[in-house]
Amino acid sequence: MFLQPRQVAEALEARAKYGAEITPLGGGTDIVVVLNRQSTGPRHFLDLSRLENYAAIRRENGCYVAGGGATFAQLGRLEVKALSQAAMTVGGAAIRNAGTIAGNLGTASPAGDGCVALLAIDADIELSHATRGRRVIPIHEYFTGFRRTALVADELITAVRFPADWRTAWYKIGKRGSINISIVCCAIGMSPRGNVRIAFGCVAPTVMRARQAEAIIAKDGLADASIEAAAQSAMKEVAPIDDHRSSASYRRAMCGVLTRRLLRELRQDAPRAAGRAE
Amino acid sequence: MATDSTTWQLRCTVNGRPIEAEVEPDETLLFFLRDKLGLTGTKGSCLEGECGSCTVIVDGRALNSCLVLCPQMQGRRIETIEGLANGDKLHVLQDKFLASGAAQCGYCTPGLIMAAKALLDQNPNPTEQEFFEGMEGNICRCTGYAAICEAIRSAVQQWK
Ligand SMILES: Cc1cc2nc3c(=O)[nH]c(=O)nc-3n(C[C@H](O)[C@H](O)[C@H](O)COP(=O)(O)OP(=O)(O)OC[C@H]3O[C@@H](n4cnc5c(N)ncnc54)[C@H](O)[C@@H]3O)c2cc1C
Ligand code: FES
Ligand code: FES
Image (tube, rainbow over all chains, first blue to last red; front, side):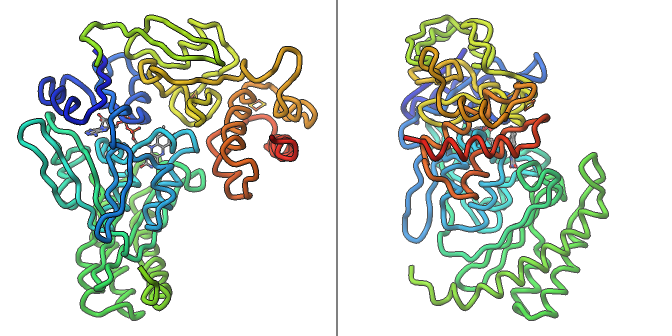
């Protein structure tokens, strides 16, 4: 079975009817890789690529609202640095033309670069159901375990909302430059009021935030000593493993390095950003 | 919306030619082009989006055909390497690849040319950064890239 609805309502009905039997298909850059590798992949698809207003990104009250079908190519043009930089390191141009933000959230890989960037700016995820309607959950409640999320099998991710005015910094350490699955990825966001979010990929079963490090910065600001304390804390908070890409100890060390480097970058940006007109 | 039947009636165009075919929902565009349409210029190797040898252009944008399911192509306009030459007259990118000696085994060449065409169709005068972003998804194991870059840059001069 392959369904190709035009209206979101139709897609939600199909999802409510078939649940886990049918696989939502965004750009296919995760699903079809699996399908090519093994003969036991999904057989029934709900193609979301034709849905009206599903790929658009719009501005709304100082926020961006990106439809689930927004591609990395589109996100790469936004002025939210962490998200656009992360988007531009996903695969090559052809992958960025296909891969969607809902797909990144759907796969919920601990290496998901879109997930890390969105976690650093307190994004909200809109999950929709045919009859129960929409619910919006903060991204830090979305990831519940290794490739497990708050998404229920009869829902679809319909949109992502995130602030347009946070200052952000981002870096990814990977084998082929950065255009590849990362060894460690870090995104840091700072709200205009000074709330800091420090997010990591590849250092725990899910993307994660170093909350104690955040608390240090919230309390003591961006002085050298508090940045150092935050970096030390981040290294203790993460829970990396050894695998074929890297060792746990290297990943842990890099979490400290990236925390330090990106917080300094944010501090440097500060005066310019404060004077920027919205 | 389609019915629950297992096969899919695909309608699209390939290099301007209208195509109507019955496809499986999990059949990829790569093997459809190669095995059903006999368009073997499009190559497959990694089947995981890493190498770019399967690059085709769909409605003006580069895609990896190994990661596209056929029904996703409903109503789409697909361009492959076979559509570039006009009779015996090579497309400027093909011409420049030849002139620069940008192919050795040639396996990566069709994908590279399609990626370059998609890039230049959208942006006839790319910056270094844009050039890199457009081409970074295509791997060549033989040439070392210098001749490839030279070929594409000299095609830029003549891009219309
Ligand atoms: C060569 C290559 C390089 C890559 N590099 C990176 C990288 O650097 N960083 C990175 O993070 N990822 C990377 N990826 C992985 C992939 O591109 C991303 O995860 C992408 O966001 C997936 O989006 P998609 O639309 O293609 O997803 P799909 O494959 O279509 O779907 C992925 C999952 O999400 C589900 N899904 C899709 N849309 C919805 C929805 N609306 N509601 C509910 N569930 C949904 C699907 O059912 C499926 O389970 C790479 C992939 C390739 C092939
Ligand atoms: S075969 Fe498609 S990217 Fe390698
Ligand atoms: S010429 Fe052999 S892979 Fe590029």
